[in-house]
Image (cartoon, rainbow, N blue to C red; front, side, top):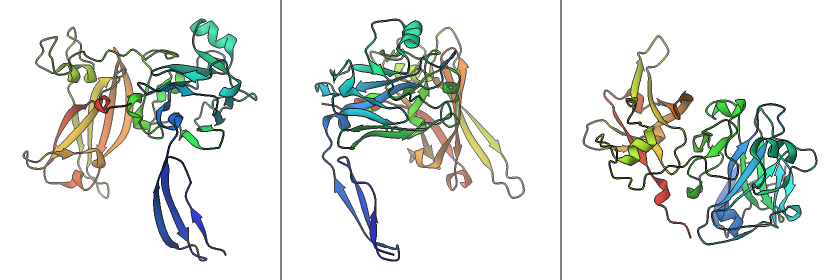
Length: 326
């Protein structure tokens, strides 16, 4: 057996692992990348893989998250999941904040959403999105990866997307990891909102209290609080240890299913003095639409935090949009 290497060379950077003849790790090296503009600023912001009816109204939406750079799309193409080369499309450049669509069937798409949307073209070579989930790859002409991720129709991915809702990337302007289910949500309405933001209503003053309920507007926005309805309080569920089964501790809260630019976060403490981010100790186990635009999110607290004599948890609103982009 010959020696070799593992890893992928990418202009985004990465890690290269050298192996000896027996397959054991010899050394590992990390390298910085030099990503192109499309790799830095082009995201897959929405996709509809299981539309109602005959299923022909599928679409993928791309968004330019830069505030100043116009992207040249002529080197961009989908090569996995669906196939489409933007060099052959009706739209070959994307201004800052611009959105562009690739659809399965133009007549079916137009019948549902109407004309005059920014459609670059239709999926090529009779390709279509899988209702059971699959790998999506967006790359440049030199096979450099722009985006690569695998979506699914099962939890923790939003299961509503398998019944006519679209998958919407949460806080796309922060360039989130597309491969993490926690970075996607179901659209505000069945069929999604191709070509447009999905019902954004971020508060003008996140620290204000426009409805006078004593909570910052950012928290009201995140939780979907409505002055006309009582808020749904976060709750903890505890199942004591049973035989060989350990204690089960879960945290659930209702959040605004259409929130953009704000995400729920959890902090923990064992003494009410020092608080830390609980993300490494939580596993997302369920997401369920509740109606009224709200979604219930449930995390399971993992060991060893789960097994502490006492644990205090508190919910917070994170606003990653504050990260500056060019």
